[in-house]
Length: 216
Ligand code: AMP
Image (cartoon, rainbow, N blue to C red; front, top):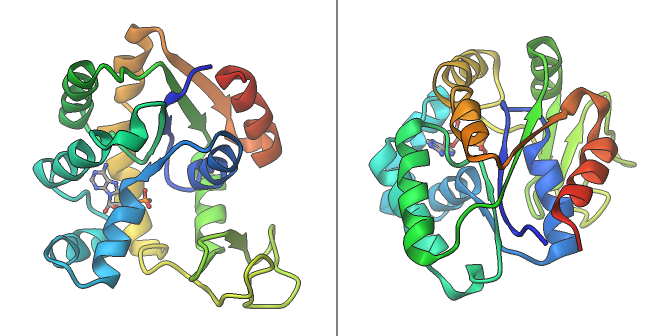
């Protein structure tokens, strides 16, 4: 089984949705830097205060800060049998730092799943995206409606729109993705661990391909 995994792809490609299904099946820690920053903001910590402005604008949080929190998290015991990185790395400096760290820990990445999706579709998905405040389950005002408007089917929590899911920040996030994150595809192609999946085919397709790649 390949259990040291990175999920890559532009915002809205379906990384978070796939991650939720994979961690339910494989019981490996889900390391989402976006979630870590959102939790820090909620808890009003120093990290949260620092990350907040960057996130609201759609900008990347500085590398030293982001690398620092991932280093700490990946070194924990629960990552010794696998981990699912979601939203990290996003820059070449992050990818290089991750390579060093995972080599030192003997927890090398053995699968990079890149979910591809065209820009028009990403904008459609993100502008209608809603998320459960309690459990983080993803919805969409047109494509994934809850049974009761504004209420999560799974836990009954309230649905909300992420503050960075607006037109302004989305422009910045997409441009950061194309300029800084997309070039990492060739970085991981060289390692021989990268697999591209077509996100336009939907979340069930992406999940069924992903579990074939990971194995049992
Ligand atoms: P996400 O939930 O992955 O879409 O991330 C939300 C926001 O958190 C991003 O737009 C960035 O502001 C910040 N963020 C998440 N991951 C990273 C990262 N690897 N490097 C820098 N900033 C990040």
